Length: 224
Image (cartoon, rainbow, N blue to C red):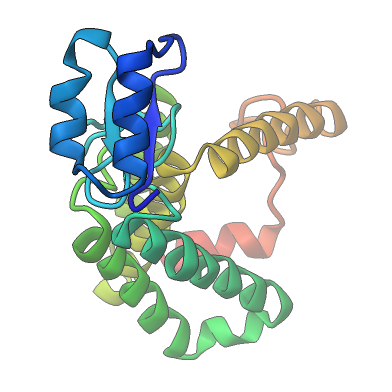
C-alpha cells in the first residue's frame, strides 16, 4: 500500500469495503476517499504516515497502552523517536554505567540537555506530562527530593537531575516496553531489599530502609 493504515480489528469488511481498500492500496484513491466510501462500515482508518495514533493523541497524558503517539516505522516523528531518541538514551545510560567517571565531565549534562530538548520540541511537547498515577507519584517524589537536597548546589546540578527524571519517565510513558520493566524492576527491587535489610540501621529511619554509610550521610548533610 502507498500509505500504512490500520483497521479496528473487531470490524469485518464487506465486499464494498474490501474493494475500497484494494483501490486505496493500488493508489487509485486517497485515504479521504477511502474513509468516505467506507463510512457505513464503522471501520476507522489511520494514516500512520501522516497522523498521530488515534489511541494515543497528543494532549492525552495517559501512558501509551495501544501504541506510541506516532507510528515508529511510518510517521517521521515516530521514526525520529525509534531510530534516534531511544538509541541515544540507551547508549548514554550504557556509557555512564561502563564509565562512571564521565559524570564528572561536562559531556553528560550536555547530552542529557540535548535529549531532553529533542523529546519536548521535536517529538511532542507534552511528553513529560502524565496522567498515570504511578509516574506522577515517582516524579513528585524525585523532584521534591531534588528541590530539597540539591538546593545549595549550583543550578546546573538541579537542572541536570530534573532532566534525567523527565527523560526516564517520558520514555516510560511513551513506550510500554520500558514502562512495564521499569515498574516491575522497581517493585521487585523494593521487595528484595526489604527482605535483605528488614531493619534499618537508624532508629529514625523506617524499617526496611536502604542503609547509608556514615560518609554518605555526612555528604548529604554537607552538600544539602
